[in-house]
Image 1 (cartoon, rainbow, N blue to C red):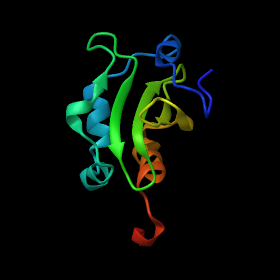
Image 2: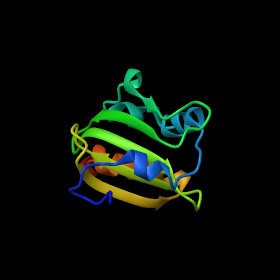
Image 3: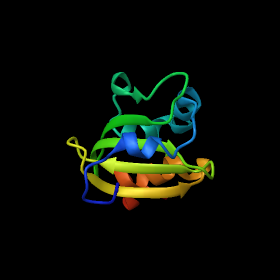
Image 4: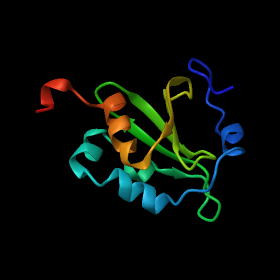
Length: 119
């Protein structure tokens, strides 16, 4: 379940995830503000599972390589699992066991990054 090409079942995924702090996650993603805004994020459409027992964070993006949804979970190893889906929930890409300091760069590579801009 929750493989590339399937429909995202976030309710099933949240059963095996740890709690996350959405404010810390947003701060982490916004550390490089120019990169964050290049994803075409709409902050009014952040979906947080729950404020007390938050196990899932979702954001809507409109980047160069990916337009759709980004689901972020914290797995049992305290690492991030990221799912990129289209607007209907079909999984396009999966990243597992991503360290916190690699999270924004991993997302950027999948959503927006262009090698011509890298110096």
